[in-house]
Length: 342
Image (cartoon, rainbow, N blue to C red; front, side):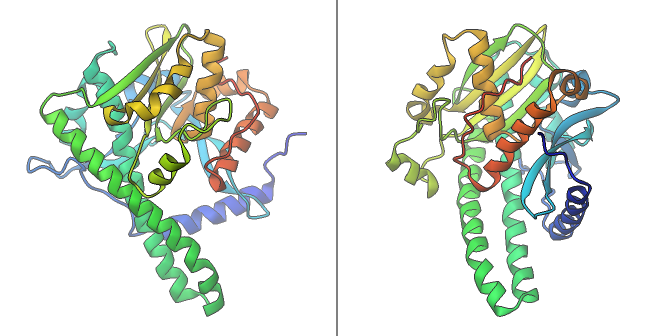
């Protein structure tokens, strides 16, 4: 039997959201990451997924079905699907109006034509969003530690301090890595050199009302095997390696485009894993991409009508379970086969 979202779960989630909102006051980042003298200083809610081109196509009455963070009556963290306005979905305050327009014009205003420049910019925007998210995460942990120190007794502070400090240190390491990569790709854009990013381009034969823009490190294969050696895994944890993938999915020209991009310097670390997506039939490809999405990507949106008509309550519950497990265990891999492309 599928566990319904209880009324008390909703109440706890509302309470949790208020706490998060209060915590985020003063920690949000609103700046142009491009950071040049010609910035117009008008910071916009930049869409990581094209609003007029793709979100408009899959929305229903201006709404997108997306994942939202919540909490259960038992205070367990969880993900839920909720409708979100397409004008606010997938946005981040990471660019001024001028640079958001100029930088991404080749993918905002032009049809996708498998050009190297377009693939580069799709990946760059995924990195920019993750860089911005990590900046805010560091600010949140700093404030959380201050709140904990000022509003807890000594025992409570001692018990929780270590956990939050560890999380803060990990975020600082990742932030430094993202900053270096962002600046490197920025220079390549200035030079119109798009060879720093490689992209595996795939296409499904039907337009599915699904969009995704995400950055992640793929630790496990579909067969639950490690992608990296123990030595490489340890180097990833301290920021010496960052073999991230940039995944973009969008409906285009009667099909569904899937772009799996990565930095050229990490080709040898990811090549074997990415070959598992080649020379397979479409049914298997759908399963592999679906696993990748539910395993690693929270910046994903669906047509509300599509979710209502194509997925049972049991299937939606399975998807939520995988996402929720990943909150506390980034190496969690579900043995459940999920197909998002129906």
